Image 1: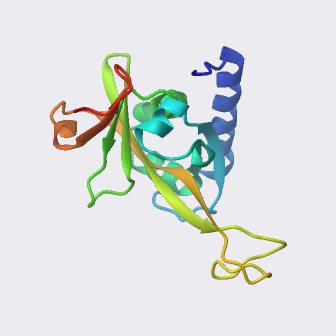
Image 2: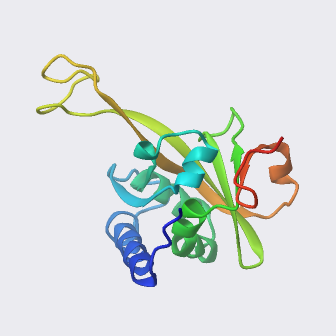
Amino acid sequence: KIKIISFDEFEHMLKILKNFFEKNIKGTPYKAIVIDRKVYLCRLTNAVCDGIEITNNAGKVYVTSRALKHLFDKKPAEEFFFLIDNLYKIVKYPDKIYQNKTSKRGEYCLVKRVGDSDYLCSIEIVKSAAAVLGLTEFGISECGESNEIEEIQIATAFRLRDSDYIKKYTLLWSWEDGTPPS
């Protein structure tokens, strides 16, 4: 079953994302390096996790300051703020999921129709060292154990201006039937 969040929960997540932007990105010079931070956006639904064949344990999605800075620098202001306002919905409840091209950043493209346009959000699965009893160095904990964790991060997002753009990608999952195409 899909848990639909309440309007209050959605507004809370939106407030956190906007606050993250205000503290880390707003007012920075074009292409400036920003402090490497991340903020939790949402957990993928079970249906979406099944669609891209990942465990729900790895279904948490984060937005990094680097990705947000990229969107801020590359998108017109109107599109940037629209993406901020709708990123949660695009990621949490995509209409379709495509395999991303190997030449592009991110493994999957989540596509959702919002208003009169389709929006694409590329997500990547990132492996990073997790500390066990303290700091890690080169993926090895103080105990000598290698302990990598996987998390999902936003690579980029944009409005699909060309309806043929996504036709070149392999459809993995569609909300219409919840299964991969045959």
